[in-house]
Amino acid sequence: QEQITLARAEAVPLVSIAAIIQNNTSGFASRVAGSPGEWEGLRYGSFGSPFEEPTLRELMGCSGSSFDALEIVNTGFSDPLALLEQGQIDLAWIFYGWQGIQAELQGIELEVVMMEDWFDCIPDYYTPVIFAAEATLEDRPEIVRAFLIAVSRGYRFAIGEPASAAAILLDAVPELDRQLVQESQEWLSPRYQADATRWGEQDLEVWSTYSQWMAEHDIIAQPIQAERAFTNEYLP
Image (cartoon, rainbow, N blue to C red; front, side, top):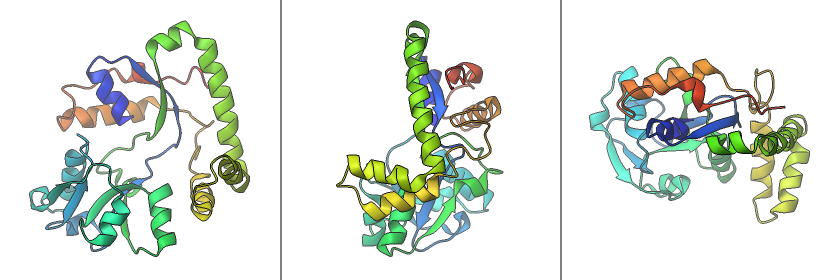
């Protein structure tokens, strides 16, 4: 959602057509600090996103600490768990459903500040999403609908049968870590749809609230037309 909003703010006509997970399952992982109020003096491993500084600044502000006391280290897309374990950084933004589970399996003890616990500070947003170009939706709607019928069927299966879904993935990509895939799928399966009426459903309030937050924190110049940034029309 954050990337689609950024694109639409620059007049790039992309539209989100399904939310893969209903709530933000990312978080900030550290081996030395358990809350944003303890992040002063730490080294944050940045992958260069325009959302990082405003998010960190807001979380620390909500905790009464100062973002200016956080050191930003440009790490690109290096493995954050390896960097944390090697002591090259103290703080990293991860997706818990994969990297958090991976850390548990590797015996890396982490304190993770989950975004879902801070929605009173930073609004929820859908991440990741499936998106398409406006032109594709206009010119080939039947293809989009057929695609989402298939994808929805797969996610509904993963929700109801996480072990079987993991086995299918492992059969297709056997080089993946078997235990990681299995435990990740077990963790994610109840979160794909959560309390939504169907998998993939998106809500206007989530889009408009986060767009407003992005504008207030100078990530975009002004809020986008949220109702044009997503659609539920093609979901089965």
